Image (cartoon, rainbow, N blue to C red; front, side, top):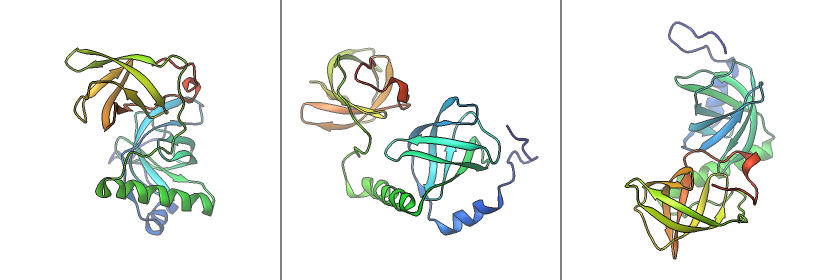
Amino acid sequence: MTELSRSGTAPALPDYAAEQRRHQRVRATLLGRYMLADRREYPCQTVDMSPGGVRLTCAVIGALGERVVLYLEQIGRLEGVIVRHPPRGFAMRINATPRKRDKIASQLMWLANRESLGLPEGRTNERLVPHQPGVTLRLESGRFIAARIIDISMSGVALATSSSPPIGTHIMVGSTPGRVVRYFEGGIGAQFMLPISPDRFHEGITL
């Protein structure tokens, strides 16, 4: 950890302001996980992002200049360094090739336009079908619903079920918390509250 200033915010590294000027930042709420120099993983959520940097809300804040490996739903794996300590998290500069930055820019443009254009949920994450697809859903009311996993990604799951809880409903998919984000014929799509750790993401997974 680094010592904060009296205002509660550590000074930014000089090139962070330059990064903000070069790249338009998009407000985006994406779940993710990050690894600091101690090689431990922690959950996080984005506040805003550009092809050159991302601001995260998280509980464990590394030191300025510390290397970060970040995995974000619908974006993928990113590497960078911590450059600023805003309230309740940190901002990191993304280290990437020009080609990778162009890809990030396209992904951010798609995310920014998805809601206004009514586009369906993205499927940029790898998806798999577990060996044991049967699962029980528990609603906030305590009601239980039988369902079958159609496919699953690190950030969400498609479920075949005869019930259609309202969009935004918080549910337990087995023992994994999530919320309903879409409908399709014969089922629902749910987003996990925290992405699944890569070491659990395989066909033998049990939610």
